[in-house]
Amino acid sequence: MKGMDTETEEVKDDQNEPLVPAVERTHRILWELHMASPHGLGASELAEKLDLPRSSAYRLVRSLKSLGYLIEAGNGGGFTLGPSILDIARSAFRAHDLVSVSRPFLTRLSSICGQTVKLSAERGNEVEVLDCVESTHPFRLSAQIGSRFPITAGAASKVLLAHMPETLRSRLLEDPLPKYTEHSITDKKTMTDCLLQIRKDGIAYDNEEHAPGIRALAAPVFDSLGRCVAAVSIAYMAASKPESSDLATWEIHLSRCVADIRQALLGP
Image 1 (cartoon, rainbow, N blue to C red):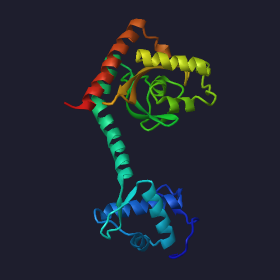
Image 2: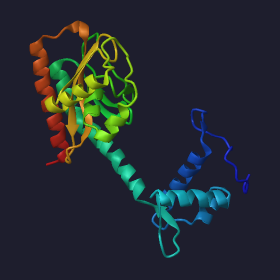
Image 3: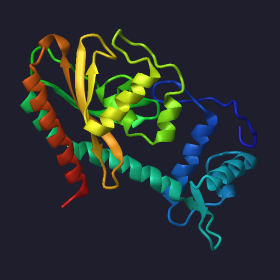
Image 4: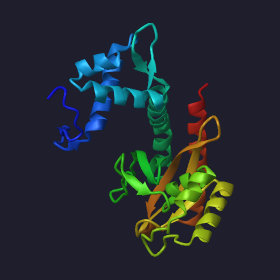
């Protein structure tokens, strides 16, 4: 009902799951301003368009302005989208570019090694699979795009953890390290030494640390500023028992893969 300032109103998404009212309202405000760009809308206009109490609209607009999501357009034009929206959009485009740029190099690496190859990125205390090129073997490993893994176990995870800013890495290592298998690294000193070695060597190995029977090796992808933005990993079944010469060859081609991705991201 218009004019009723309540936070208990329930809205549902396409999966019939309830949405948080404040989040849904914020989305509607940002979308209306997107549609109204570049002229903007005032808080009272937003309240009218979205059938919101003026007090709610004003509170949301003030908060979004303080966080940089809105700016005042000037000349009585109301509010328009601010720089924080642009930063988020740039991040989304970078992720999309990373996947599209990396795909041919991941495909080449998978073809050379005959194993499943993944592209992963850090997401707080987890690692998300951005892309996956599966092996053509009848019995092969696979990973669903968008699936999440812990950041303290696995080759790609350790690469991303090793190249995190030190303050973030230290924060993640404050809590006890989970034990997923008998090979999981649960000692903080051992993990710290392992991460130092990964930064030195440029390669990380997973010796069935997260799932029994699955091993991997991974290397970092750096951007133009030298920041680690992703990890490429080669995953294989421990039962396949590749020769040490095979692993050495995979390392060479993995290093070439991440170098080629970085060069492609830099452009001509």
